[in-house]
Amino acid sequence: MPMTTNEAAETLRDITRTERRSASAYGYGEASPHLILWGLVWAVGYTFAWLRPQWNWTWLALAVLGSLGSFWIGARARAGKRAGYDWRFGATFAAVFLFIAALFAVMPPHTNNQAGAFFPILVALGYALVGIWARGWRMTLLGAAVAALTLFGFFALPAQFAPWMAVVGGGGLILGGFWLRSV
Amino acid sequence: MDQPNAIIHQPVRLKIMAALKPLPQSEKLEFVRLKAIVGATEGNLGAHIATLEEAGYVVVEKDFFANRPRTRVALTRPGRRAFEDYVADLREIIGTSGA
Image (tube, rainbow over all chains, first blue to last red; front, top):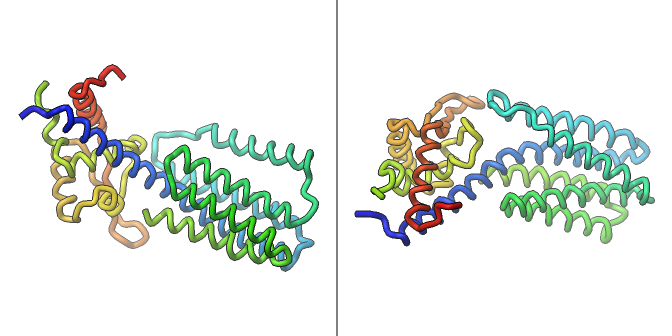
């Protein structure tokens, strides 16, 4: 018996639902190791910021290590696949770096807490935007949680902001990474 | 128009194909993740994957990862084409083929 218009429309809706679910799960799987890595970077970085605030260089060293780690994870994930290096990753990285440099030139942070809160909020915005555009509500929720926890620590716990971010920020990203993997 | 591709048209197989379609070419999806997306039992999913494999629409790869057996499934080129044709057939039925 030939398929009716309604059956065809319902089947197309099923296909769209499944494709979206699969695309989200795939994206979560790709993002998960990066989140765990940067969660570790945050945990170590804010611990140093708390215990050795004069060692400012640790953030630079950790940022370089984290970036190299992210590139390695990305290269490993693409190993054996046809897709080559996408120049947009490097361009995005450069654009964000230049944006931060320009912003800090115009409005430099006056306290360690301001600098320590700025990056998590920027990262949270990134997660939220990725979630909105890729229809990955878990990413959006994770971005909202990171931003909310950062703002809470900044305003409510200024004296304990660094350890707060080490535990809640770093730990939150690590747990978030495992949560994405569970899809 | 005739009935759409009967191999793909079965609901579980349709979901398997739809789950594999958004992945980059030759990218594999783990069996456990596919099971969660499709919402089928292990035995049912395995049987339908076997049918799709016989038709040449998917390839199944079994290996060990972190000392655990792992089964992954990927869409083949003919499978991707067949699925696209199937979707085009559905669009033709509802009259939106001019996209």
